[in-house]
Each structure stands twice: as structure tokens, then as C-alpha cells.
Picture (cartoon, rainbow, N blue to C red):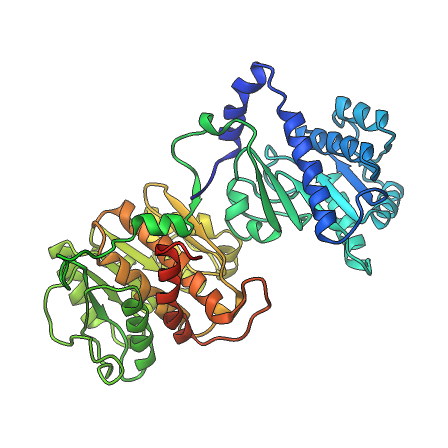
Length: 499
């Protein structure tokens, strides 16, 4: 599992080691230099003679970058430094001692012209402008530096590779936002622990490939992470593998009130997603004709261990009745599509999962008197999901290129890895079914439901990647039903260690 921590928690974890004289900056700068060397090798470039520009701010990240520049210079790399006034004195001294040319610049037009010239010279940039202590929109003169660097990068016929020290300059480190100009990275060297910006969009989308560097602080970090991301091993650990004594009722019965004569495809796609993850039974009570495609589906009422309600419904009156019964019986419920809005007006079971896209989440938050536009939600999905979770008491899955999952007690996951090809009609209906199939077989607690939502997002993304054949490739277009078709093989790989 990937765990990310807030900047003040990372700083607190570092403090005992710094007080004991541990050379954390030496470890970080060496790791940064090694990342640059590995990147040069991967691009087919020679280390000796390659041109690297270090851009250094006033903080410790600037120091890391300066010491990394000194290490690279001693390896034969041509290194130049552009730094702000007040940059790390020891780092500057080390760079100069290694023969590095350093230039102090501010934000004047003349200085920015010099900066652009240095940027045009460097085939690799080490970004040490801002560290994890920065918050809010970037202030001057750093904002002008970032804008000048971005302009030079866009104008370059051979774009430089940007290696960020810990986080790309300009990201919202603790919340994953992009509050102002940002210097997007091709690679980010995460020191000691990941921060929410490494996992949460939109900031995570500008981090590039992330290299994790342990520096000895791991045992000092809080027990509870700020945001997590599940991987294959985590899904395997929570998966309930059936044994010889299991049967359809012990493996979980999922009830589905989805689809209609108007939107039958939503029902079929959701059922397909549910069956693909192996519940004992799917009990379908919607208005679509589904048994011709899925003869194993039961269409008579009966007991269920979880509900999926909403996908493709054109009338919510029956949804309200089923939701009220679920409250009375204590059955977990997933509210999808139009049924998400019921969370603003109806009593919910103790375990409820809402699965809105940004538009549906905007509607819900408006009904809850916490208005956020679709654009504001896409700019801050973690904050939006947490706001809805606190207001409703439900677990909220803010669906997007990276799914952000938040619970009312503060738990959060961010699950990426899906190709852009996943963004097709019906993919959300499939996800609701996948989540329902998993939720029907787990303990009816909020913690288990949040983990189930994260696992469903991971599986959905992995299946989309497999269907699109996009692992290391551009891939190909897919339809939503191909995600369901790919799921059994993905689960096979995860459970049998073949991924």
C-alpha cells in the first residue's frame, strides 16, 4: 500500500534524526543525483558532458538540488545553477567547489531573460525551487520563474526533462491541488515518504514517474496516513477466496435496482461488472430485461447483503423504498448516478457508498448547501469528496481519471493507473457493479467499505488497462463491457501472483 503524509507529519518524523545529526540532506541529494543519472541512461544519453540546470530556491529542497548538482559535476556532468537570493549557503558552496557556475537571479525582466537562456542550455532541469513547506499559490518571484521556465520548455524543439526534488514546484502538497503556476515534472524523487500531492489529482498528474527514496524516517511517521493507494498485494490480502464449505449465500448476494426500459444498458453493464468479481448471487429487481444476457441472475425478491441503486433509473420512487428497507435492515447500499442525490434528502444506512462523477457531486453538494461547481470539484476532488462525506456520513467515491475516495472519519484513498481509454459511457455503471460485488462479501463497516471502494477502483483501472492493451503502450479504444470481460483475468493475476 502506498501511504502519503502531510508536510508537518514528515517534518516531525525528520526532527529526531536531524537532532541526532543524521545526514538527511546528503541522502536526499545523492538520491536526486542518482535519479538524474538513471534518467540520462534511460534516454540514451551519456552522463559525462550532459547539460543539467539546477534551479534552487531558499529552502532545504534547494539545498538538496544544489548538493545533487555538485555530485553530478564531479561525475563529469556540465552543471549550471540559477538560484534565488538566500539559497542554501552550504549547498551553494559545495556546487561552486565542484566547479559549477552559479547565477543569482530575482524576478526582473533582465533576470528572467538570463533564466530562459540557462534553461535553453540545459537538457535536464533539477527543480529545487519550492519544498513541502510551501502552501497556497506560488508567490513572486518564484511564480515568474515558473512561468518563464514553462514558456522556454514549450518553445524548445527538444523539451528538457524536469526532475523534481520531493514535489514539483507549485503543487498543493497536502491537498493535491494546483493553486497557481506549476513546473510539471517528468520524474519526482519523493524523499522519505509520499505526500498527498503524489497521489491526489490534479497535482499527481504533474509529478511524472515517482521514485521513492527511504531516508530513515519511516518508523517516525504517524500510524494513520493522510491518503493511501491500494496495489495488487493489498487487493489480494482483502480478497475473500471461497473454500469448500462456501456457497452462494456465504459468498455474498448483491441486490441491484438499476436500469430501465429507457436505459437497459446500465443494468447490463452493472451486472456484468458485479458477476465478474464473483459474488455468490446477483438479485436483479430493476425494469430492464437482463436474463437473456445473464441467465444466472435471479429476478425474484429475497435477502441480499448489499445493494446497488441508481444506474440507469428514470424514476427514483422505488429506489426510495428500497433505500428505506436497507436502512431498517442495516444492509450496505451503493448509490450511483441519479440516486446519489437521495443522500441529501433520505436517511442512509450506516454503510453507504456514493459513486458520483464531478457533475453529480456538484449537484449533491448544492443540495447540501455546500455549493461547488464541476470545475471547482475537478480542481480539488479530495476536498469535495471529504465535504460530501462529512455532510452525509457516507463514503464518497469522486470518480475521475484518478478515483478519490473519502470517508466521514477522514480516511481517504486515491486510485489511479487507468488509461484515458477508460473514459467511455457505461464505465461508471460497470464500476458500481464491481464495487457491489465486492461489498456484498465484506464486513458491513465503513472501514471495510472504503477499502472495498478502493479495491474496486484498482481492479477497474487494471481491467481497463488490460482491455486497452496500454501497459507501456498507447493502447486502443475500448467499450465499457470490455472492462468486465478483462476482470476475471486481472483477479487471476492478482491472486495467483502472475501480474
